[in-house]
Amino acid sequence: MSDKPGEQSYQSIAHTTRRELAGAFVAAPMAMTLQISLASAQSTPAAAPSLPSPVGVTINGRLYALSLDPRTTLIDLLRERLDLTGTKKGCDQGQCGACTVLMNGRRVNSCLVLAVMCEGAQITTIEGLGKGAQLHPLQQAFIDRDAFQCGYCTPGQICSAAGMISEGRARTADEIREAMSGNICRCGAYPNIVAAIQDVMGQS
Amino acid sequence: MITFEYARASDVPEALRLVAGDRAKFIAGGTNLVDLMKVDVERPTKLVDITRLPLSGVDRLQGGGVLVGALVRNSDLANHPLVQERYPVLASAIMAGASGQLRNMASTGGNVLQRTRCPYFYDTATPCNKRVPGTGCSAIDGFNRNNGILGTSASCIATHPSDMCVALAMLGAIVHVSSLSGDRQIPMADFHRLPGDTPNRDTNLESGEIITAVELPAVGYAANYTYLKIRDRMSYAFALVSVAAGLIVEGGVIKDARLALGGVAHKPWRNPAAEVALRGQPANTATFSGAADLLLRDAKGYGHNTFKIDLARRCISRALTQAARGTPQSQSNKKIL
Ligand SMILES: Cc1cc2nc3c(=O)[nH]c(=O)nc-3n(C[C@H](O)[C@H](O)[C@H](O)COP(=O)(O)OP(=O)(O)OC[C@H]3O[C@@H](n4cnc5c(N)ncnc54)[C@H](O)[C@@H]3O)c2cc1C
Ligand code: SF4
Ligand code: FES
Ligand code: FES
Image (tube, rainbow over all chains, first blue to last red; front, side, top):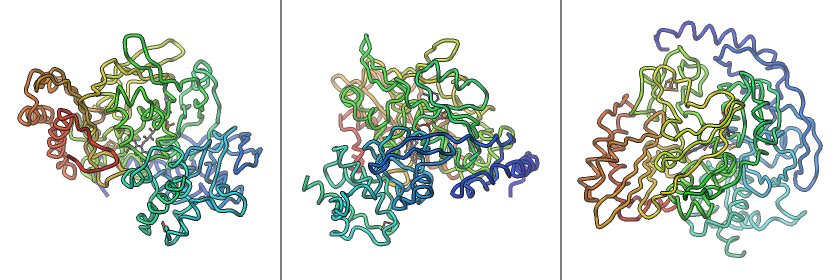
């Protein structure tokens, strides 16, 4: 560790806070406990428990009336409360795109959206993209083009591609690659992902 | 994330009333604030949701400028016909930043107020004067590849990470602000601060103030401009160095020049002396490298980031060349010509 002056007092602040945070730790929903266990270095005390907030949100065509801890992110609502586990959590920091869903028709990272802010919104996840048992053309094209290996990034890739196509700006392969750069694929299926998207753009 | 109270405002006065109090914060796109709350760097006890405020217009002003509402989303601003036609450097800078998803969420006001990406600022296990004043700066002798080379201080060498703000600084935009005690306007050049010995303060916005709009002046440098961004990968990464350049060239001679740098300082970096020195000069390589030398005269590297001085020098020359030729950097085809 560094021997900078101030290091000592800094660490003792961190210790106090870790203890003070215990209350918040217990109250936190499962998915967030990991974040909270990273003890904070600020000396401000933890706040009182959050009051649940009412939220009305339409997800895949179904209206939900919910009462939520305001800390709940949209991805945690989908996965932990509503069992819509098609949406994946990769980084939880906006850096990978695995959690991409459509909010009022626009692609967003559901890990950075507070669910309480979705009041009145229409959310579409990978589960709601197709019509019943009929796959969305992008889902079919990803299968036809073998546009994945492990498949973990795929729901985010497909929702992102759906949003990108309705934005209507990307045309060339370069433009598609740039417009899809918010979706990381650790398996490196990029060439086939671009091909699948081009198939669907060619059809429409 | 600590617990917080959530409130929704429907107009500016209501938002200002709701935010009164020390630890309340506005939330717009949430792409920076939620991220920082998850790692306990931001710890508001109350969030005031301003996404329903009527601040989503992009309107022409008398006198030729354009007023951009604080809640206009980054993607909508970049694609707005007025911006594409009259301020293409702004559209280009926005499209060079973040991702399609993030730009759909991020707001104009939130982008201006986004916080540094210095890795130690995010890591609550390390000292950081910006996060906890008086604890020290881990970056000065640490991993500082992303940190600043201009206007740094012994307390902090962080950079402001926004691409959009580099174009706003180049254009000479004006930030419109309201509080319970009235309205004021802050030129972009005076909006962000240098770290000095108070790096905990990023900007001159006071607590209790809200950004309502950003005003773009009449001159957009739409014929001769570029936004050149260099990063560790070709897309979806913050700038190591970026340059927004705008020129007015007549018969090969520079009549007016604007230049702002990103990724190098605690604020979008402009040096009026370098712009004055370009005026009246022939638009050629010798002139451009002279301007680059002037801009970087006081640059200081900290080890991992010392390469940025040379990189910035070349970026400035290249950006001015692109602007003079009327061949702005493409943000999809990444070839730098
Ligand atoms: C993975 C990732 C990559 C990114 N890459 C880039 C990049 O390459 N280039 C780039 O420029 N940016 C990048 N960003 C940053 C992104 O541009 C910002 O997060 C975004 O612009 C912030 O806007 P927001 O509306 O979401 O702000 P919020 O998170 O809602 O708010 C940010 C801050 O501003 C305050 N605030 C918001 N609106 C107002 C207002 N009207 N008045 C007063 N206070 C207000 C909030 O209280 C908060 O403190 C990236 C972000 C992520 C997560
Ligand atoms: S450079 Fe600034 S933000 Fe980074 S560790 Fe030092 S004080 Fe903190
Ligand atoms: S989980 Fe949301 S972007 Fe990675
Ligand atoms: S298919 Fe495995 S991450 Fe993309």
